[in-house]
Image (cartoon, rainbow, N blue to C red):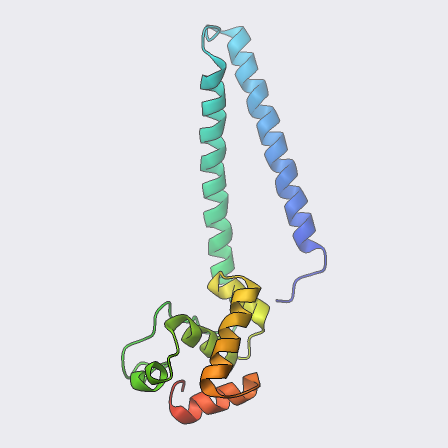
Length: 165
């Protein structure tokens, strides 16, 4: 990821300020309506519920938007990794017995495919939505199962065994 240093902090604080301003505006509107019109008899729980529902909807909308941006910004020339191993003859895992015989799990196969694409551990974690220690654990398990010590050796051996194209 070629992000500008501090850009995540800027996005974070912008989001916090926007949420704060939206909350303040919503409270102002609710209080104005309460005092101006006939909503004086509603309990506080109604207002709290209304604010919770609105911010939940806003959070879902913002999350889906940022997820769509994240998925679209995988980068040029990068191919998505399948969520499960493909059927026989479809690329990664085309010789199903080869990776199953070594005890390699489907998730480890995904990690191996991304390692073969030259991705860093952090990039793998971001794409697969897992933590960095989980990626390191999968990599370590792969190295043990393939009996190698380096990422390049793992890719070479997996290619020679027909596990990855």
